[in-house]
Length: 264
Image (cartoon, rainbow, N blue to C red; front, side):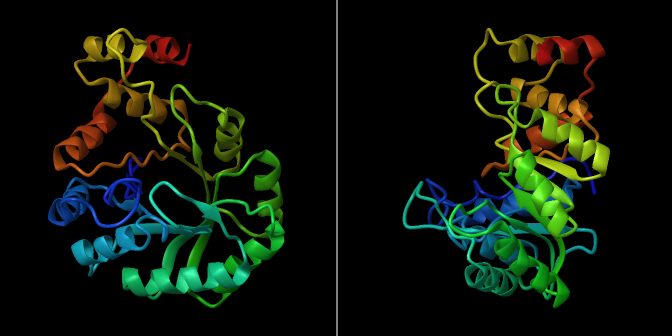
């Protein structure tokens, strides 16, 4: 896989709810991502809900042979900006099977437990994914929004290929988890990889961006890539122009001094 993927949350409506304002632009973004060499698209049944997965299929099916589609289950939606955890095995099974239908797939490359539901034992939630993998409906299992203890518990239950947590230059709560992913051969997929740290003309990002001839957002992505070989950022957007800017960030080379300055 290329080290820069695409997060398909933002191709839905405001509040990650409903249809996008311009569905054709959303599909153009997906097609352009693949044209630019992106071969990981990350989504979830809760994005829309259902909208993101459906648009991916409409834009890209039949899929290129090297395209990996990762999706997630574990949230229910009741309105814009509203997220309710549901890690019950029956919910995860029905979510996965519905995702297979929407995405027009016989097997999902990476199916991720979107969160840990405090009302459901982790072994029961992951047990549903293990069964789905045994049945051939899931190729690999990933997890999301887990701390170190939860990740360790997940890995005792099954083989885990990826961890998707919030991480960006101004939010580094998952710092130690990145190191453990690198050590153990897991991909670390940072969600919200641009965050709020890329704004502000007086920020360190802005100063480094001026030096390298890029944008602060590009520098934020380049810093993530420099942080660890396990890092697999998935910046998302609903704009083709912004997509092209993000993908170009993979070619940006930061010096050791610039990485150290950004790291602080």
